[in-house]
Amino acid sequence: MAKESIYDLIFDIARHIPKGRVTSYGAIAKCIGTGASARLVGWAMHLAGNYPDVPAHRVVNSKGLLTGKHHFGGDRMEKLLKKEGIKVKNDQVQQFETVFWDPATLGL
Image: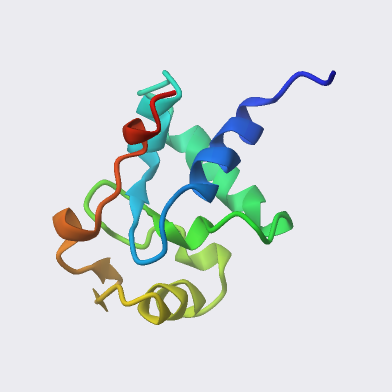
């Protein structure tokens, strides 16, 4: 059996983010036990473009900013979030605390 990579674990967590909710790079990093590695999660979300089942558009920074939007091209990340009912203004998720999903609820 092949050993699961850290990226596989990050992708699996991202797949659990419910529609209409977002989480942060840091929250995923904390969930996998690498709390100081939010940047690693960012790289994984960049690579997620190769995995259509990974909803990378639901991962934002700790303040709700769409810092990864350039990986989606134009305003695609914002459009995907808005399609799920998430309000975005000036590249920032509105009511971030309300739509934030904590991956720690997965119990990993």
